Amino acid sequence: MSDALLTIEGLTKRFGGVTAVNGVDMVVPQGTVMGLMGPNGAGKTSLVNLVTGFYTPDEGSVLFEGDEMAGLAPHQISRRGITRTYQNVRLLSGFSVLEQVVAGMYASRKASSLSSLVMWPGERRERRECLERADALLTRVGVTERRELAETLPYGTQRRVEIARALATDPRLVLLDEPTAGMNREESVAVGELIRSVRDQGLTVLVVEHNMRLILDYCDAAYVMSFGEVLSHGTPQECVDDPAVQKAYFGKENDASGIPALRELRSDPRRP
Image (cartoon, rainbow, N blue to C red; front, side, top):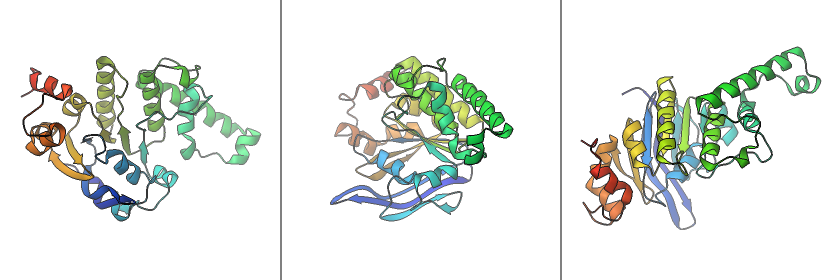
C-alpha cells in the first residue's frame, strides 16, 4: 500500500460520561479510497469531526502528512488540504448552485480584500477563472443546474453540489460523510464512479457510509466501528464477513435476516 497520508493514534473523545470515540487507531494510505462503516451511534461522524477540527480530542493524535492536526481550527485544517462533506447537507441559504462551489474556493484565493473591493484586473481575472472552474466541477459531479438556488434542488442533487464544493478547496484528503444518503441506486452508482475518478486523479478519500454496496464496489479497504472503537479492518469483503461485524449489526453471528442491505449483498451474484 501507499505511504500513510492520515494516521490516527489512540484518538479518544468523551462527552460527559459517554465515550464517543475510544482509543481509535487508523491509517489512510495516500491515493486510496478508505471506507468507514458501523451501526448508528458507532462514532463515525464523531471521528470525522475530530479529524476536521470540529471536536478537540481528549487523547490521541491526528497526523496529516506527519503534521499534528489535533487542536487546530477547522479552517486551518482545511487550508492544509483536508476537506469534508456533512451527514446532513449544509449549503449556503440564498446562494445559487454556482455560487456554492465558488464559495468553496475562498480559502485558496490569492487576491487581497482590497483588490476585491476595487476590482483590479487581477481580481476580475481570478473571478472569471473561479466561475469557469466551478462550472467544470459541477459538470464533473453530474449537476446541470447553475443559477438555481441550491436549496430548491432535489436532495440527491444537493449532495452532489456539496461534493463539488468540497473539491473546490483543492484538497488532498476528502472526507465524505454518507455521500449517497437520499439517493436512488443509479445516483449512488454515479457517486461511486465519481469517488473512483477522484482517487484516480491522485486524491485520497475517506467514505463514511451505510450503503455497503458502495463500500464493497468502490473502496480499497475499510474500517468498521462499534461503540466508539475499531471492530474490524481489512478489505471491504473481509469486514462484511467478519463474525464480530455480523454480531454488531445483527445481534448474533451469521444472522442477516434483520438487515435488508446485507440480505441483498449475500444474494448478489457478483459477491465472491
